[in-house]
Image (cartoon, rainbow, N blue to C red; front, side):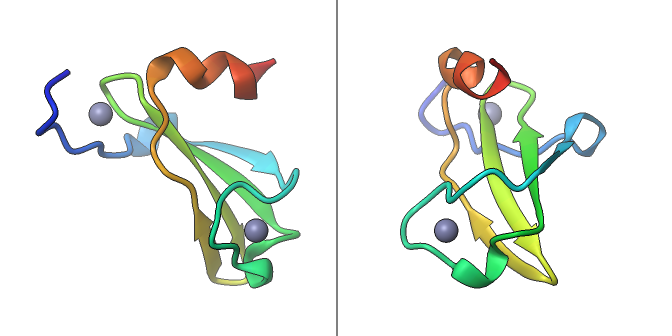
Length: 72
Ligand SMILES: [Zn+2]
Ligand SMILES: [Zn+2]
């Protein structure tokens, strides 16, 4: 993966999970309490997005090696 690669979510692979806590800083408390979307890039990187009533809290992209943390 080159450093110029820009991660893009593959909509077909986006997972929807119940909200399970804050995922990033700065925090957007209004995005808490809804769902947590897990987006996957074709390169294997992923990121979490808390979504509630139109409010979003978007985490940074994580490298593929970190996937196990969220899938356990
Ligand atoms: Zn990527
Ligand atoms: Zn938060």
